Amino acid sequence: MADTVAFIGLGAMGAPMASNLLAAGFALRAFNRNPERAGPLAQLGATVCASIAEAVRGARFVVSIVSDDDATRAVMLGDSGVVANAARGTSIVDSSTNTPATAREVAQAAASRGLAYVDAPVSGSVPQARNRELVFMAGGDAATVESARPLFDAMGRMWVHVGASGAGATVKLVSNMLSGTMTAALAEAVSVAQAAGVDPDATQAILAEGPVGSRLLRAKLPKMLARDFSPQFQLALMDKDLRYFLALAQQADRPAPIASLVRSEYQAARRAGFGALDTSALVAHVAGEAPPR
Image 1 (tube, rainbow, N blue to C red):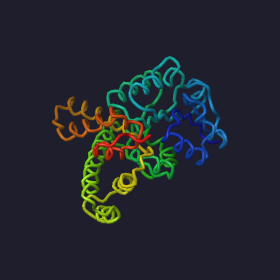
Image 2: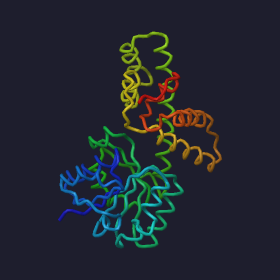
Image 3: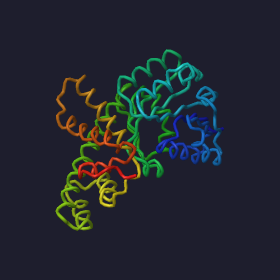
Image 4: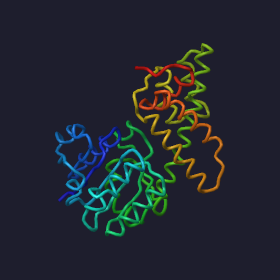
């Protein structure tokens, strides 16, 4: 009989991840604050639940991907949350991008009730979630991480056990700092190239083959050139992740002047109304454009 997975958070990333678990043969019990988002999964055979407590009932695993520390604490530590209602022996795989401190807090609370918790955020955005190409960075007990291998295999192409609780969250923030910095630099480069009248197709061809050619450039450069800011990774979420990274750097007593400058760019763009758009919208903010309607 297939293991049952409770899936919490059916946003842009969560919905395709949950769908891939269903396709792999897991029995899925889904919860989302907006139940309408669960409709497509219900058509695929998932059980849509009215509460987190209902979703985790009888589940061998719980997978969660929500927006930030506050959402994670509500989902995990609230009276109607996962830790208070899951049965002893349940394993929690949290793919949210949280601070390491929150990951360790939830891990400790879970352990006190006989649950296992893995902070396992992902590298990749919506296309990678759809195509099972996510990379999981997992922090927690090695045996617990290994037990979640079938879930990682169903949702991604790679997983790495990076250390104890909080290590997954730490590596994720480092990764997103680099991603946010590269996107900001690309936005400035594209803005200057366009203002100088360089052919956009030629710009794309050369940059893709140059020293900064990467998956990120291949994903973001076409969106910037086409002014297609449909969200794959919301700018407001990157702003949050950079804020978390700077707090981590401060705790570690390490300077982070580049990240601080980059975060100020995202913060200004978010305040200017670009927050719900893709991070590629930073190019419009740099060029002094108003947010598209």
